[in-house]
Length: 583
Image (cartoon, rainbow, N blue to C red):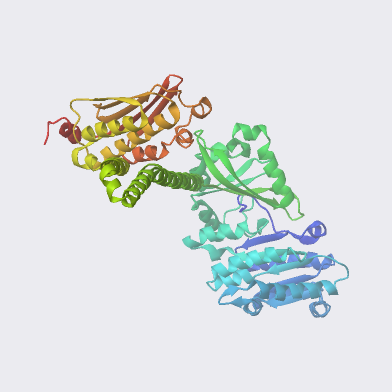
């Protein structure tokens, strides 16, 4: 995107440029007066026809007739050239109506229509050469209030250039962009072209006063406060500077004009030759666009979108560059934040899936354990009881009198043992005592049952001020106790387990220690608590439960044993109630 202002650029002449012109030639001409436009286009078409190149003019009926009259006055037989297919005139209104659908250009219809004209013109040419085109269709649509259609048409011209070789110049009266809402659209139109070329009726001549349209053009540029619009000489030195450039970079025009464009680049970009490479690519391609960090006058950085467009004189020689730079730091940071948020969401989803899988596995493991306990303990006892009762039933009357007492005693013992086993199993799932009397009573009972079936001796210290807490807090601590003792029994090899329950610094704390072999170094050495809890130690679910209560679960281990500490913050009111100070 570029607009050249501040020095005379002149109208462009196709005579020299066409032989070396490629299919990327798509330029735009802004003019102030019809007479200037007609004269500029006359030179364009004259040079094309004189060089043996066919020409197509798509314009208003007035401009077509005026241009034909001028060509006739110079000795060109317009009728003959038209019959030969070397000079084609198309009315902009009629032509555009053939590819518009609901006031929008239809890509297929446009390609078929204009592509067909190009094909016929090239078939009539003396050699396989490119076609010169002057088009006012976009300007016509713009004047009809169809700005979106005009900008879409510029894109369709670019698409057509991928399959047909032609050199195109679109023309707009600068008065079409007098409204405030047209400013950004003007910049968009410029961005669709490889060069922006004001005619000599537009660009101020050295020492000449600006005409009304020229002043309007300058005011329009200066009103674009979020766009730094500048022109550079062929070496990259700044030669013009709009108010928006001052707003974006902090430099006044007298501070920056004459300075090299590299002034805005970071040191690492200077070292890699980035400014020079941008100018080279713009020269080779006609247009160059990139995003990157730039420097303001105060040394601060901003993320810039920069577009450079090459400017050429009548003979196609390089006379400089026009550039537009926008500060898009906010957009870039928002995009980064969005990407980071999306990454966090993906990581959270992965963590949630891992946790869900772990919970499912834990649920399956718990069901397996309950099923095994029911089968191995309660099931065996009930089977033995059944056989004893069947044996008692088969005894004769005389035998029953002698043996019934002993067998009934065994049956009673089996029933008692089964009841105790069933009671222990059900209470381990959810002890009613925890809900009715709290941790202070539930933990001693659980430790007694644990020691009885595991043989591991336990000790318990509960601070005197420890009373009741909300059910979710007490249940979470009880589950940690169960899980920690299960690990002691299954993995540690310890013959003792020590427990402490106390309040410290506004937290309720449960501490479980053993004197076993500890957690293997290859697991503990991973260093990440999340990985540690997921590594088969069986505490990940408890860790998540602690997090739900804004608490934490800490684990330390060595060859001398393992310690698990569950910490849950409590409010001042809860602490006072636990200590018996508040009711």
